[in-house]
Length: 186
Image 1: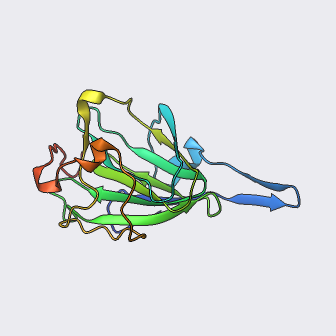
Image 2: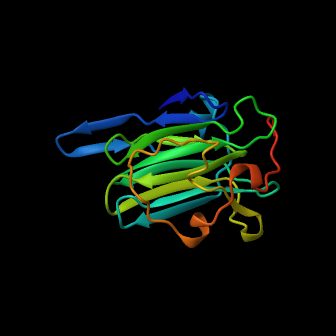
Image 3: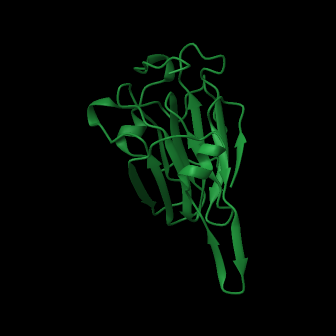
């Protein structure tokens, strides 16, 4: 596995080593010891999977407040997505900045999104499956969101279409109005 840092402290791209031949391929998608040696040390306790049927589906921007904040390790196992992390640590020098990357079943890249970041993705194909590990259980009372189109964040989504949204995501607040209890270094 290779780990690449991004412009946002703690957000990392992970590329597994893919061993292929005429039969197909094999790869380790997660190896706690290998990742720990590469500086990625999280105790993931739950795996999640989503299916988005329609190209242009947008999920996010989601996060959970402290004390139930989640680190996520995200991968796309069918189709492709544009995956985004937004720094919401109020005292961070990159507060409000975002990083985006295409994750797909073909490129097999993963994105590590630590606590203190909002997460969202847009599907680039139909019938997209996304799987991710989290290091904290889902907590409805800590669940929060930020509107995907916040002009102060300025995410450059890859498709200029009206996205398919849940009611929750369509009505999420702007970053400046969102409930946030993160600071850098937590």
